[in-house]
Image (cartoon, rainbow, N blue to C red; front, side):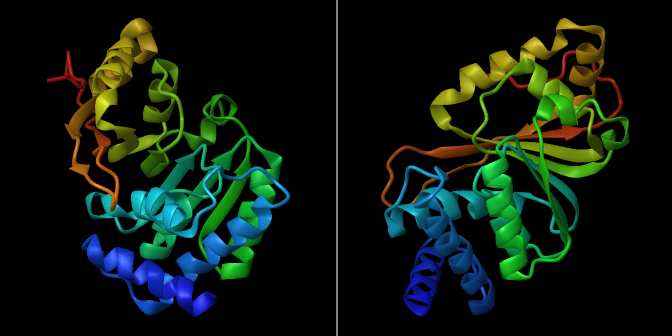
Length: 239
């Protein structure tokens, strides 16, 4: 099954214009297989079909990789079963990846995956982003923060922005139809003195869109870059 699954990943990646080495495809395959095995005991994902997992979890995680830094310190918030954090770590081995999740079962799973795959430069933390954001040592730490399956809240964006280094980015995965809600949430970050400062320090940079194989609805990643220059009125506007 290992070779079959690895070949399937390579085929889907090639069709999507992603260049993967066989070794990296093997690691991605092993991550998914471990998720399927653990899913029999824990509720890690509702998607159980192999091809659907590859498309909706794996490809959705790595298709935006070309917009991201290939090294530095990254934080994946609400990582769940490790998407996009683990695939990004496999594609970009020089990333120092921190995986954060509030579920102890998922943290146990992620710890096992990192050990089984022999991934270096990866930490798995148990906790809520609300508590994580209060730790002073986490401020201005990360070049990249990702969030793929979290509900957008102004407080979330505000808190995450304070953890990003100047020139670092916050990247959110959304359906294209979520643009107005995303814009409204970002605009709401200016409701407090701290939020207003961070709101001015972050610049909405891009919203590259892409299609997943076999899925008609476009996906988008929303990228904010921390400027640290206090621009008034910066933020995302919906078209």
